Length: 201
Image (cartoon, rainbow, N blue to C red; front, top):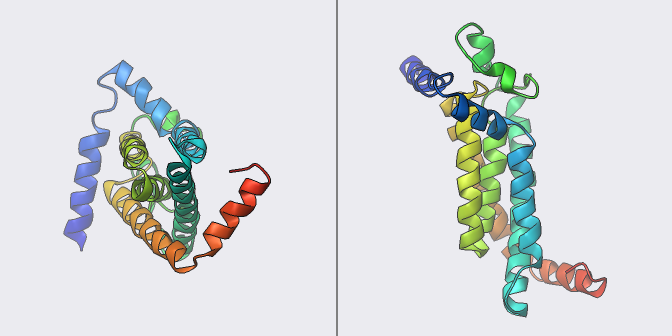
């Protein structure tokens, strides 16, 4: 297991070592790494999806996709929170304070465990949930999830293994949410009908 951690750290320093070579790329990563910009974009895509659809059938499919995605995101965050109770891996900038550049680019220095990455879990739950109902939206969200995850390693907030673990959680939980919503039919249909009556759908 030690060799696996060593490999993870080597990959981290390979990615994090890119920091400081290009001012423009550093500035871009600083914008991408925070807990505001990409999460806002993820939420805006989901919000837009709720109202989009070339016909009533497509619109309803998109709204069910939003249900699935929202459920997946919520449960993914909960799973990470529970895992954090038993796992306490330190962040790279805590392990190697003198070797990790750009930590000052973070809006704050996270104090929760590094593994698994909550950012990756949430982002990949967004992407996976959307992919089931709308491939274009899912592809866009997947791109944003990858960029956010890469930025978290680039800026020293996570090791690659933290990202992989978080992404796996996000994907699996969103997949589970997709099937759970199918099993609890007609509840989602009734909720959508109720929301249409009050002009929320």
